[in-house]
Length: 109
Image (cartoon, rainbow, N blue to C red; front, side, top):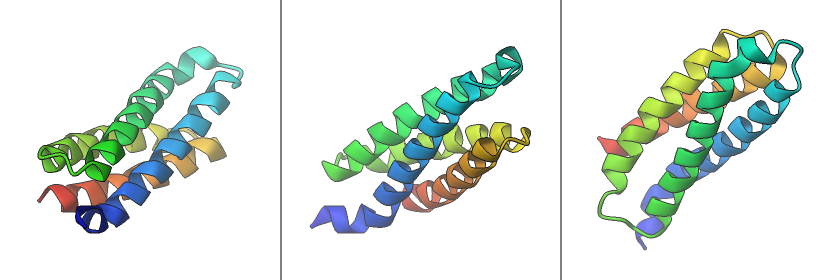
């Protein structure tokens, strides 16, 4: 079963997607939403791409490795942005994103 090869990466993508969705929602409730604009944008893109990557791996796409490589880049960008903010939701998101980036990069190798 091809999915078992991807199991850890699928799980990391789903956890990252969840963290990004929570961060996105929490950022919208912050006092200075304008300051959070880049974080919010990257949360959206990262969550969407993690969902896409998980689906690609679950369906054993012939492009799964390339998709994981792009996912790693997006996760890393989101994680680095979230790390800049002191909010707990941003820090949790940064951890999930950077972990996902590392696992996706290994999968793509």
